[in-house]
Length: 251
Image 1: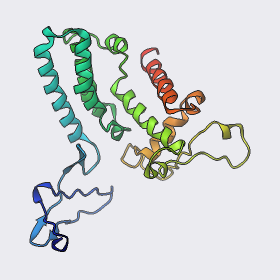
Image 2: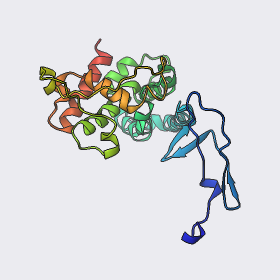
Image 3: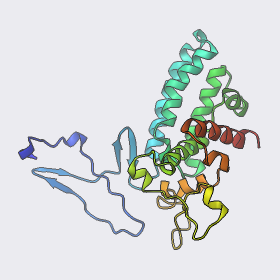
């Protein structure tokens, strides 16, 4: 480091070890010159808090706490705002926070996502200036807001569209492959993705079974063919949002 005129900043240096299920406990303390860097339970990267078991509990808690404080401040000036201006403010300061890197939450159980959904429910009530006991499903439908789970699906499937059409970064395209049948079948033109085999894998949800390379092909292949074969990203996003909206609000 001295040869490159660099100096270690211990306040910004973190070591996060992601062990496997049967991995033994290891001492991964790193010595850099006279400085010692010890492993941490969580580490922040690009604003996302990662933990050593990829449960994203700390990240969800931090997002929830930030959004709750923002809603508290908006609520104090709500009497001076119109419904439209409140909606714009909430979408800019709260919804954008809920959507940030939300594809990382794909595959998490509903109980883990629930705190974020409660924040969205509170935001919808604030837009319409309604009390806490108000039912939120009609409000979300009126605002045309997809629930948090559907928003995670939406972001993940948009990434899958980029990968399937060769417009995404190489590391995304390497995670999914187009489905090529062994013989001539009608499904060859259905633009499906090859689903990786989970034979011999864990029976319960884990980081391995909830990864992008597993969930993206599964969710992609479940889409109607007119969505998978959309000719442009704009058309795909429009059809996908309509599909998810009907799936969550019209069943």
